[in-house]
Image (cartoon, rainbow, N blue to C red; front, side):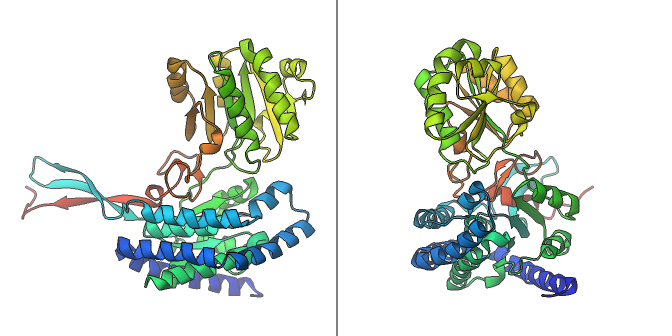
Length: 422
């Protein structure tokens, strides 16, 4: 595809085929959708060796391009991650199918019954970077929700995404569903993204999964609704009433279990009365894991390895073995810090004070708020959604990990028996 015209024509072809497939999927039975998901999972496992080989090509190219360690971590497909992709598809298959469900039926004074039916969104366009597992996760969730999807992955994962697409198409065909229900864009040209964002006649919603520059571009150029989040500046607040062992375990896990994810801890807040007791053992665990610590003045006095934090550090989503540490004078200061510097993604409190925990859940305006649990649990798989299409920090339509319900909508249905309005 040498010209912008060729790319526009190619993308519109994808859009037309996706719209036609969406009509078929909207009527597809749960049995057919689940059979496709199971077949996809089996094919992924059968072709694990080929997937790893394709991914190795991407990893080698990424290293040659000096991709950041966090991006390489997201890009890598290990046998364990392939098994996890397959398990995610099976979990989606095991979930109840919400499409066609009628709820809230009520009689009106006129005698009619009014309710709501859950329906697919139609065609979902997904633009993402690095993580090839998104290809399988997104395909599975969109399929279960009765949507067709157009997937545009990053150039760094081209071979991996194409290899996964083979399994997806095989699963659809095995279940008698249209292969065009899931289409992976084959060109890495940036113009393809622009075309996708403008295809309002074919695409019902866009989901960007990537860095700030990608989300900013999608927000600026899209002519269709967007489900998005910008940053994952996640906090853990260790309250005065925190259990020592829980506090250390959660603070360490939230930061070190995996660095390159949007639900990883970036700033740890510790109540001043507990700082001398709790910060040093946490810092020792961070140091042993190779985590760089940037702290406030009080932190630096307690933690010799810490360097002074700048104002910019409190806003930073590191996606790396770096953490910001701050000692606060109490609950109100902790909440104020989260409100000012957070991104409304995921924030947690460690406390044995039930009233304080409940107040935290009210006061912190994030898509996931946790009590005595690691922020790393903010994930569709862990929430029982099977997988997720992304995490939305917006407040309209879907919020938090977006699973099947977030990929569907509702329409009003009315039942009468010859009723006419007078």
